[in-house]
Image (cartoon, rainbow, N blue to C red):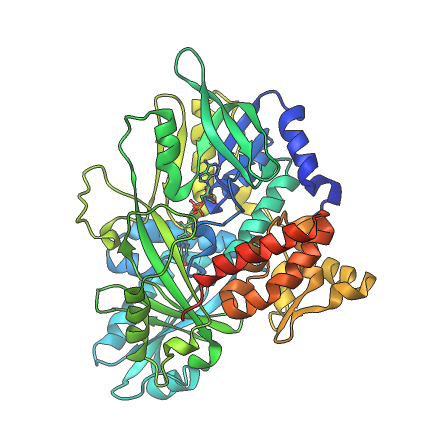
Amino acid sequence: MNSYPLSEMSREGLIKQLTDSVENWDFIIIGGGATGLGIAVDAASRGYKTVLLEQSDFAKATSSRSTKLVHGGVRYLQKGDVALVVEALRERGYLKKNAPHLVKDQRFIIGNYKWWERPFYTIGLTLYDLLAGKMSLGRSLPMRRKEVIRNIPRIVQKNLKGGVVYHDGQFDDSRLAINLMQTAIEKGATVLNYCRVTRLLKNGEGKITGVTAENVLEGGSFDLKGNCIINATGIFVDDIIQMDNPEEKPMVRPSQGVHLVVDKSFLGGDDAIMIPKTSDGRVMFGVPWHNRVILGTTDIPVKDFVLEPKALEEEVDFILETVSRYLEKAPQRKDILCVFAGLRPLAAPKNHSDSTKTKEISRSHKLIVSNSGLVTITGGKWTTYRQMAEESVDTGIKTGNIPFRKCQTRDLKIHGYLLNPDRTKWKYIYGSDQAEIIKLEKENVSFGQKLHKDYEFTAGEVVWAVRKEMARTVDDVLARRVRALYLDAKASVEMAPAVAKIMAMELKRDKSWEQQQVKEYVEIAGAYILN
Ligand SMILES: Cc1cc2nc3c(=O)[nH]c(=O)nc-3n(C[C@H](O)[C@H](O)[C@H](O)COP(=O)(O)OP(=O)(O)OC[C@H]3O[C@@H](n4cnc5c(N)ncnc54)[C@H](O)[C@@H]3O)c2cc1C
């Protein structure tokens, strides 16, 4: 895959492209999470003139706050949603094939404490493997008690009868979002963060012909014309739908999911655990991720549609309490390195009542076309973003009267593509870009300096994030480029002044910008730290 020249990534250059280069776009995509970025990659790789506008940073909302699983969804199988599982397992296979630097095979172990659980879960998970067909990542097998203990040394041993091991995919969500943004640009799309769509433009017949957007960072606004406008704004889709038609009923019911991040030693091995039935009847995971373990998640209906949702005390307690029943030396509040919350854009059925439990609302996506021609896509999963993108573009081709071209993404390598990276070093996450970052650090000694004594992250990664990954704030770097916020929120606050200083030099900003950035970051990170 080509590495793109720096000039193509400059914000000024991209904004110029936006306003000067194209009179009428084929696709204008609103929203730069998994769904919107996937659509931009799909449309651009078919050769369409494509622009994507994100109001904040890429993956700032739900797409950086997932459990980091590329999965078919064992629990959807429990509920008999076979079609959803088959679709997700197929997509899991494509994603692992096209982004092998970010997606890996992860073993999950279910500990069994009742005699019937081992045959029950072995049969269920064998069906899961069969549904994956040749895309299966490995066979599910029963495990003897001592094997379970060997692989999950910290598992509660009292009454443990044995277990079952199965395979699923695991990834880094916001890193994949950044790589999708780069892929879209390499395929010819214009993709910009910090540009918010504020208005939809229509012709005399009420058909949508474009959008008005404002440049959130540098100021100013611009009108863009396009054949098909796609609303991929996750939990915010109703805002855009209501810009189109204020009478329309809301379709999204957000559900909050919280995760806790603790040291990897709490599991004691490289395998993940799956708790098949929590006290509220769902599943919970403990998944190793970058030398940490992610524990979660909760699932509660909420009313606020915000970019920075906050974990509730009861959610933190629920996770700690559930996990304490499965891990011998269970984590306490003081062990939590980060707590993060995300909002699922669940597309509610038309006849939903407020009392419908969110875990009962389907996780499948919804694609609708308004009378004005606005295409809206929401719901679904990170795992199925590619399929959602293909369907959205196919639909947009029809509504926008755009000449048909076939989808290319099943075999499209995602930026950073690298087979078998050495996952013992943090920088593997950059895939094929790793070599470029190391080169940068060798060229300038100061770029090789670490941001924190306890972590591998370097000044060079900050420079890289600004130059090649469109990072514009300290939060962009620490939360979604190097993931320090998610791995150790307190330590990330200690890194903030150094990051702000490097960014100020790269972006030619003054001391007051630097100070303001640190202040804003400390405020954001506060919500990820438990007191
Ligand atoms: C707790 C939790 C755990 C999950 N775990 C998994 C998992 O393990 N595996 C999995 O496959 N899926 C998982 N999911 C689901 C997955 O994360 C989501 O389906 C996916 O991230 C949704 O992406 P999106 O692009 O639709 O929405 P978002 O990521 O929310 O993106 C929408 C974007 O639109 C932007 N936007 C809004 N309004 C405007 C505007 N006016 N102008 C421009 N931009 C705008 C927002 O800023 C936002 O960035 C999980 C979800 C949650 C909440």
